[in-house]
Every structure is written in C-alpha cells, then in structure tokens.
Amino acid sequence: MQGFDSKFRDFPDYIIGITKEIWEDRGIATLHGYYAPDIVVRSPGSVVIGNESVIGATMATLAEFPDRQLLGEDVIWSGSPEEGMLSSHRIFSTATHLGDGMYGKATGKPLQYRIIADCHAKNNMIDDEWLIRDQTAIVRQIGWDAKDFAADLIAREGGPEAAVPPLTPETDLAGPYKHKGNDTVWGAHYADVLTRMMGADMAAVPEAYDRAVQSEYPGGETGHGWDPVDRFWMGLRASFPSAEFKIDHVIGREDPTMPPRAAIRWSLWGKHDGWGYFGAPTGAQVYVLGISHAEFGSFGVADPKLRREFTLFDETAIWKQILLSTG
Image (tube, rainbow, N blue to C red; front, top):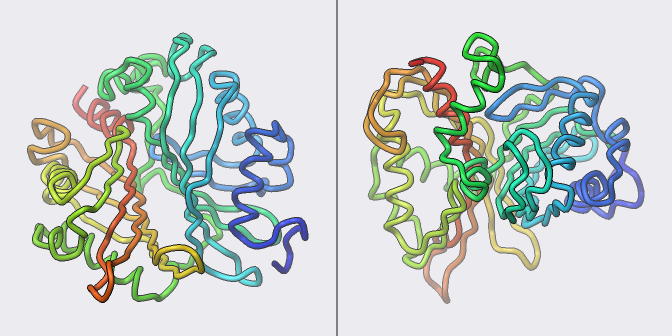
C-alpha cells in the first residue's frame, strides 16, 4: 500500500476503515486529510466540490441520524497504489430519524438502506467520488412517496428557479480519475448482460441469471428468481426507451474466500418518453446514474451464473428532473 498509512492492511481495509472512522467514530475532521481539498463528489441529486462541503454535509446527516451505522458489505476495486485505486464500496446502513433535516421533521423512524460509492484514492486521499444512496428506501420508511418528496424538496429549496440542479452531463465536473476499470472476464460478462437488457434482449435474464438469483433494487426491494429481475430492468428501460445507455466503469474481481464479482457504473441520458417505472411519459430530459454489483457462482460443474445482484439509482433525483421539466 505505497503512499497509504501503514495501519491499513490493503485497499478494502482502507475504505472500510476510514468510513467507520469518519462516521461512527465521529472523526469528521479527518476528512481534511482523507478527502482532497478540491474533491468532486457526484450524487444523483447534486455535484459538490471540496472537502469543506463534504464535512458540512456529513455533520448535517449525523445531526439528523445520530446513531447511523455503515456496515461494509463489499469493496470491489481496481488499480494499484502507484497509479491510484478505484473502489466500488457497497454499504448497508442503519439509522434512526432523530433530528430535523433534509428529510423533514424528526419522526423517530428506524431506517435500513444501502449506499454504493465509487471512490478514487491515491496517497492516502480520496480525490474523486460517485455516490448513490437508496433515497427511495429512506423516504418510504419515513413516510414519503418518492415523487412527493422530490416536489417538497423543490419547494423547500426555493422553487424551480432556485432548486439545486441534479447531476446531468451538463452539470457534471471532471475530476482526476480517468480510467475505466480493469479487464476481466467477470466485468466483461456483466457489462454484456446489462447491455443486452438495455438493448431489449430480455432473454439475457434466464440465460445469465441463476434461477434462484437474489436481487436487491431501489426502495429496499428484495427479489428472488427471474421475474423480479425482468420486471426491474424492463420497467427502467421502458421509461426511457430512446435514452442513450452507457457503461462508464467496469471492475471484475476474483478474491480468496469471495465469489467472483463485478461492479459497473452506468448511465441513461435521454427523454422520459415511455410507460414504465416512472409512469406516464412526460418528455422530460432525464439523467439516470446507476451502479450495479453482481456475484457469480454455480453448483458443481455447471457454468457460473449471476446469483446475487445489487443495483442502485436515486428515484427522487429522477422525479426531481421530471418535475423541474414539467412544472
């Protein structure tokens, strides 16, 4: 781990370790050292620049959810300490809505939700990030509908003219990370599966997914078998049938004691011109940032298939774009 603190055994230990140190151990000030002064943090709802902004947002979140835990489920990574490393870190978070904040007046509701963060790190410091929270799961558990929450957020931000613009290719900012991941059979295979489904080839589901596949999708939705996978990806693509689908980053890994895995960051950019996940078409121009994790395996000598899939995008940010476009 050249350039990194010797207390970290490897890159996953660094990612999981600093996450706990910052959030659960209340070492928020360590962000001055762990996050670059001019870091670009993209979430579907906004683009934030600089570690001072990250520190402010972290304190606001902890004021609203003071007992928040961040349980690291996986770190799928590529690169090297010398050139820089990109982690796709999947977290299962628990928290109680004990303070007033972004999600409204404190409700006392207990929450469970996932986050996936793609972070580039070099010399013990993160300098580029893509972050997706399962906002749908959060707002549902508090008592909101995703669309209603987006409308209320626009109003609280001062109306359509003053509202914080969501992430799109037009509002995005370039950061220092320029790589596209690594070249492995698992990453390439998963990229092909997603590309097939986004190209309306839904036969990819029974061909590539195990019949007992477990799926974890936005809203905290857990599914088992082929049908939930088909409904999810079909419903998403049906909402944006003419949008451009792009795979922006691909990682595949084989690690001891772990199944073969892949992490893919992808996007859709185009019109909401179809019936699907987001109801009646509105013609709004929408950007969907998504991150997906996959685990592969087989019983005996059978060819490996996709046995667990985790996908996140921010439904509230998509509704915000639709509402800002349509009024």
